[in-house]
Image (cartoon, rainbow, N blue to C red; front, top):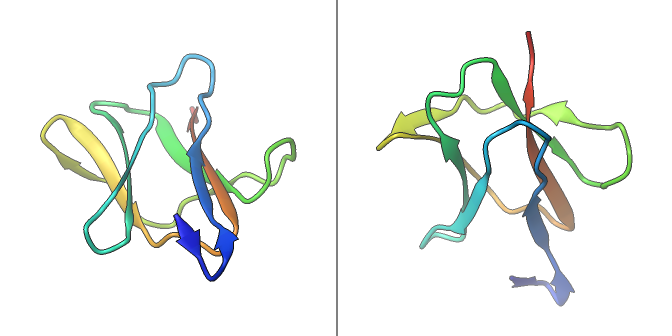
Length: 88
């Protein structure tokens, strides 16, 4: 997606042992991040930079629909990366 003359990137990063994330655009320029359900114990995290420990929990609560959990986010300015991580 080209936004304001700068590239904006939303990407999925796979955590070992976690389900695969799917990233898709919505017709209204949102981004759907989804993964297979059930996925008990896994939480979605985001980070503006790879290679750092600044991962934070995504504030939105996932909705389960059609055998997947999903969150719709507004594309950020700049990069945003997502991952699933298991929390006991």
